Length: 121
Image (tube, rainbow, N blue to C red; front, top):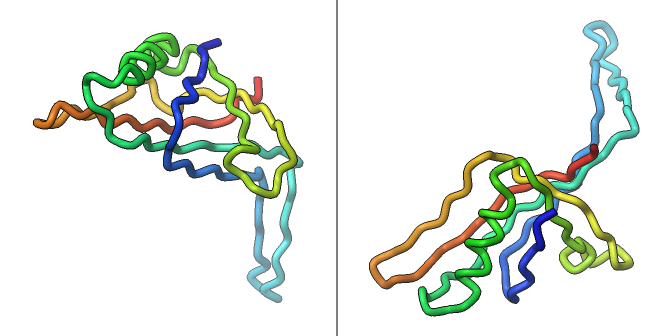
């Protein structure tokens, strides 16, 4: 398991996704919801731009390398980002893609982002 870098400010979006099916009767238009009692968290994170000289750049680059795409997982205490949860609520995540990207602009600033989903395995 890779170690999630807790390097300060981030723009974070946490989503709770439930597994449900819905049918609507073509005759009386009533809706029936089938709840499969499975839910998972998703996480999207955008870090503020970081100068190349910032030591956090190396930390984040190493984190992405340690994950090896979707192969490895990492843990995040989502109670830090979801105010109504009594913490800590540690959730194991896996990246949603085998690639990660970051941009490096003319001002020698790194821009990192990630998208992950709870690993229910």
